[in-house]
Length: 471
Image 1 (tube, rainbow, N blue to C red):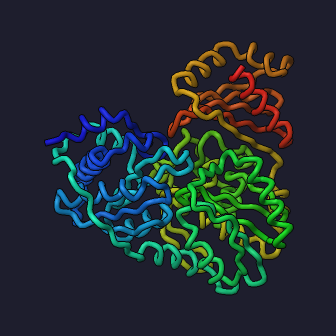
Image 2 (spheres, one colour; image 1 turned 30 degrees about the vertical axis):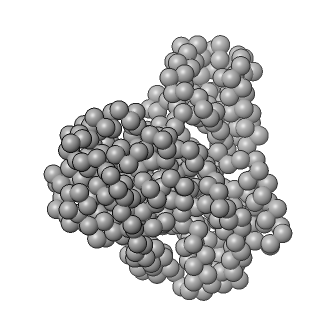
């Protein structure tokens, strides 16, 4: 017999900010089974269930990983409901409505040679405490010798579409031309159906048979140019895309300019009349300075930290939500939209913020809605294949030699106003400029965020900081 904790430890896979992540070669059938058995052992302490839902993204390795997870479920006498390739929030939503746990096989935006597993309790995402329980569980199971065939159930896709199309009149988007940058997104077969149902004319853009690791926090220059070209060529009013598993949105305005995820989240929360917001420390400070919300809490980066604040705030405020700099929107309470109640979905979602933005842009163009906000500009980028231990060493070095760092990047006369170590190292200067360093919690990447009074300066702060790191 195999022991889950031993198999997981030997694999070298750990939890990051969004699920267990690792190289594809680390996610063997037995490792996937070990995580599944450990997860089920953890869930059975507090919940009674006979079914577990599972879905995947479009990565080449995801189907075999799902088969291994299903086999593990069968070993303990549970029925697996396989929903095929759907967005993570679609899986989470249907599982929560059915009051059962679920497992999403996805590596989100990280490269295709990596993958991951996301776990959901019947009441939402697992907590950081749950993660440790899963890692330490000592569930016994037999080594997997064969993998089962899987047949797709379409219920998750159908319910996810109904969740959002039911909120609006079916002519809300009449006259709009919407481009969908499909690439390899897990939701690419659903989005056109949603927008078309609401009256839009949809243009399919660049569907790919190869997995494309779109990172909504670090949009490539190539994708920035593509959006501008598409907008002009197809006369588009809006462009919609997501990351690999469809929980982080990427939207462009009437001119093909991609919106930052936290600006999209701000506009969505305002349109929904959200009273209390929870956002990570890396989000734009326009959230506070716009003065549109009764309360704002800032947390470490990662949806578990955002979600952990919801229960407390829900006791005080009538509507609670959160979003991240990557654009993923988390609905922490039931909210009424157009006299219809939309149920809480405390996990990142890409569709809700896009539809709310389209709803409020019927009379005012998107670029004007963005322009009416306090003009604070953010930028971010990353160094890939940068060992986590090196990232930690660099952060500690800068922390103790901030003046030297500022001189090296050309900010000789700058003074530090405050330092925030909530997550990584966030340096706020007296000038209002912000530089934030953070090792990625999902993969060997080092991220740099900035905020300033112009986008050009924000970009210069990130570029000069990353150049300094690699010299």
